[in-house]
Length: 449
Ligand code: ADP
Ligand code: MG
Image (cartoon, rainbow, N blue to C red; front, side, top):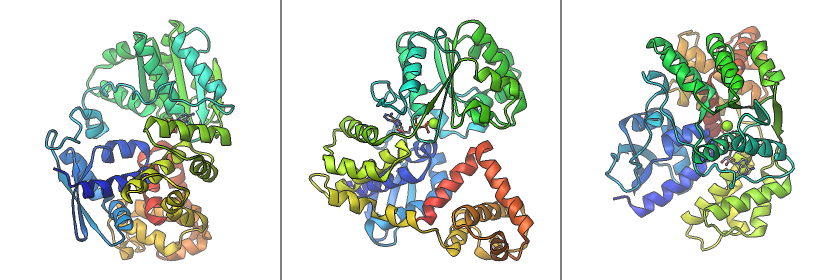
């Protein structure tokens, strides 16, 4: 059985980790973990499967240990154990296989994930900055194929695009319509797998028999020409049959790089609706709604404090609320006060203001990729090391704002064109390769400590 103290510490850590890792990463690796026991300098965390345990131990250990160390106030080593599917009341019995297995290794199509009930229209706060997108999404769910087809929703990260797509899927399926939410990455994986197993007919039948197809993060199709072509025909087929297509992306169709012009023009046939960052009233309304959903009393001054410090990302807003709630629980506070909120968020405030020191970046990259600083700055061009070095170049440039020449010197006397090349590789990689984006966000979390 889990030790309540370990569980409390681990919940507080999860509250912080949620802010620092991407949502898919959090949901896949951290969501179903539990704090098992805590002794001097050591915390044992339970993971639902061997696969998750391995991943946490190899890829997240340093981030997790630092987070826990900060919470407890002393260096702590974190180890992971398997809790098994029924070993602990907390483990999720129907943990979908899709989250536990590496996507690219599956031989069958992506299992159909049911939309998450928390992403309902009822839980979506509507205001001036998302009114059009929300209304068009509701119309698409209620009258698929009739009003705006396709509907293209775009907006910055954490502004509710995925929430709206899932809300459409929820609403449509509860009305007995066949609707499918997929990310364009899942669509690509499905397609590639179907081809590899000679099952492209099945793939087509499956996608083309839908009444609503909701595709998230369309930018991932960039540069994938065959998948784009297949998607083009799927789209035409669905559209001709009056089926609703809804797409979401972080930028408008015209700004999609690496997507064929015929697809881009299709995306502009229907309605393009943007979502802008929420204004103050909306931020307050969202905080109060999230607190209500979790049965948490959130005093108005604390809500205002949170709304003032996180402006352009609802995910971060939610993350800061979770962090405050976890901190209040950890310190056994009866109510959430302004004092608790500002203490819970203090670490974030200081790190956000000054650029990180170059040494901190280099050390974090070395730790993260489990190589030594010497290797990172050496002449070796072995691929994993060169890739780690490119990431270091990128962070030194983007976050520490160092001159190219200086970066070259720090990384083993390389000339500035090598640095430009490295930085560029990473910046183009971010949109095409989700893993790079994830690595960067985890690294930034390490660096900001
Ligand atoms: P995106 O896909 O645009 O990056 P998400 O849909 O994942 O963003 O939203 C991030 C988080 O913020 C989710 O937990 C979502 O529920 C929440 N969220 C975003 N906008 C709203 C809103 N208007 N009302 C309620 N929650 C919201
Ligand atoms: Mg999203």
